[in-house]
Length: 110
Length: 114
Picture 1: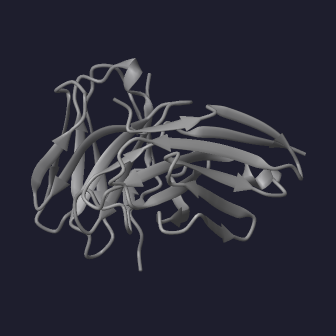
Picture 2: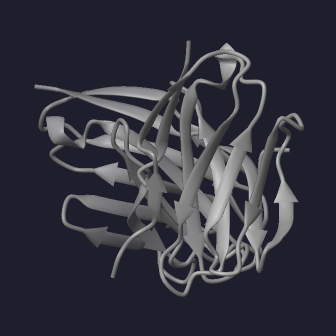
């Protein structure tokens, strides 16, 4: 059973556009929701994270929107740039157990 | 503060050989996990070690094994290499098992089987 479902699998966005990646979870015990960014040939790196007591967190052009009732959270990349082209993973954690989404390959076209 | 260090960065082996990959976690981190990542695929969990004990194991054949030393450094071994073993192998470390806070990945070892 997939604990965290991520979509879409791939995404192509024009430069300057908004990239949106979604994740859904089932376990209401999850209390930490990070997003990771991975460039080719590198390991994933923490990009931004949110806890369920807030509905939105913004860091520069990156925003996490969190909907506790729907058990969904999403990553929004505003003004997408070619340098944002990477694979993005969501994750969910209970504190002693965690699960990764399957990843989204984002391509930003100049 | 040094990050997670994986060596070597690149490796080319032939079918049937065996390989050992190394991972040095962040200082103070005692939990080390290994993942296999193939092109377009997600993070396939291999195993997790804490205090020199394997705590969890993913769905991989017995050709894949690992160990952890008293200094928390970990090694992963793959025997009888197959073409399908070509992948990026990632190591990640954290203070405690199952803890995503502070979970840090290394840059990986790119293993190519010819």
